[in-house]
Length: 262
Length: 356
Image (cartoon, rainbow over all chains, first blue to last red; front, side, top):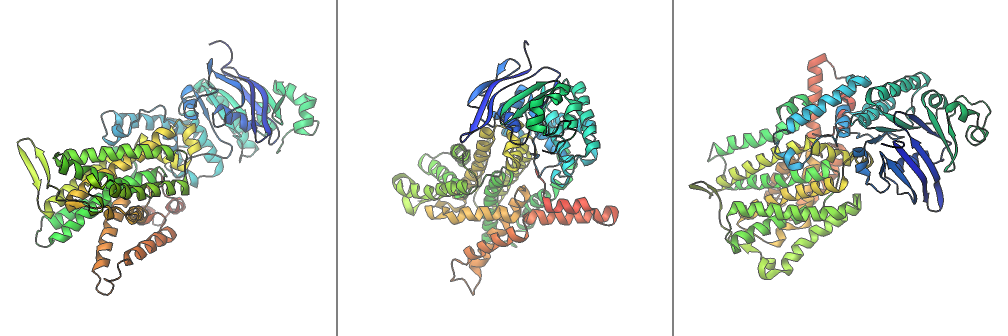
């Protein structure tokens, strides 16, 4: 593979005249953890939704593993190796933790209503393997105690973790994390940063993360992109971005930012 | 199968209840003839046939979260296909019922396509229109469907087994046939909803966004759910036609679609066993109401009662009979284990679980 794992060029999308993302270039190299930051409404989640193919960009291309996925269908994306989490948690609320992870393995397990209904040979073994993989992931994330709890009964912080597990269990090459620290305190955020780094080592993962918590992003990411009003206003190493005057003015609003709750 | 029953303890109760009922009723009514008069057996057969529809509809509404107010249409398609094939073409009963199921499934698949763009009340209206249209089409095509007077004199149901042919002559024979079909289709539905396919269905119901992001092809799984539930309704329609030996368009009104909906709401959405219990209960209730001496001239009493059941169930038993069974069982299990219910179990009672 030549070039970056994920390469976005000139991504543009508008909603009813409002340009949400305006000609954004962005790339993620294999093994990198890249942060996408910016004030509310800057278009960060919109970029995610374009990569996930929930939104139809008007212009621009999205390439993943040298393949143009700009016009792919949303359910194909995880098959290509891109899994994601959601800002406000999109779990299957009535299911248990284990069942949610099994849904995460949807593309890994063979399907077919007739095959399942008749319990043809192999269905039981497939289910057992899928359950074993899910259990292993629960163990890695320390969720084993909540394995059979219905996820809507779990605290928000744990729901975020279940969502992370559901995204990881298909062993994606690229993980899109939408505000992973939401609902976590400072100490938990640091734990989460460690966890994401560990996951990168363990699963050869690359990560693109949207985040508000500046200290989290600064400590975790190899590179940052800063969006403001849909445009990319800065990019580079966290230390450089932090000193960039345009960033300070647009996003941080103060000369020496530590934590932002914007 | 066995592993699922063990590892998913909370899923067993309503299923065990339904399957138990199917097994206990033959023991009671079949083994002791004379206790059960013919019309009771006929009524039970009817209830079992409706239960087949209810289980299929449960997969669509309860598990996949796609409403249908037109399942009487699929039931009619199955009934007419099967009746026409046996009457006009002289095809064997078994072949006719299987074709009836397949035709209904194919039309279910087609109806599933517009359903991809509709949801909630819009889908309800679209499927309602479908259910209304089918009997009208039957009347319109009267030259070969028998019009509003219907089709009559259907041959006895029979099952060729090598050199022998089992002919289902009596109400008791037909009851066994209906029970056998129901058991097979219950197990099939149970297998589907507790597996990969069933998880995809529930994922769509819980969050289409999450389902898509996890790789669930909405087109494929929504049309599959429609086709599957139409298959059940079609097979049941075929059985129904041969139980009555005759059918007419007025057997398949919108009221019947509402019946089916009430069965699964009363039984508990998302529960195969619930659909079964709901069907049995409502069929007997309807019959009992028409036999009440005081109100036998109030023909539409059943409609009033049906509406009341729907409203009361939704208001007070959101998880239906299956939910009641589950909470009783969980309370009992908790009391046995540690003397008092745990908080998370109480919370779970209110939530209901996903794939059952």
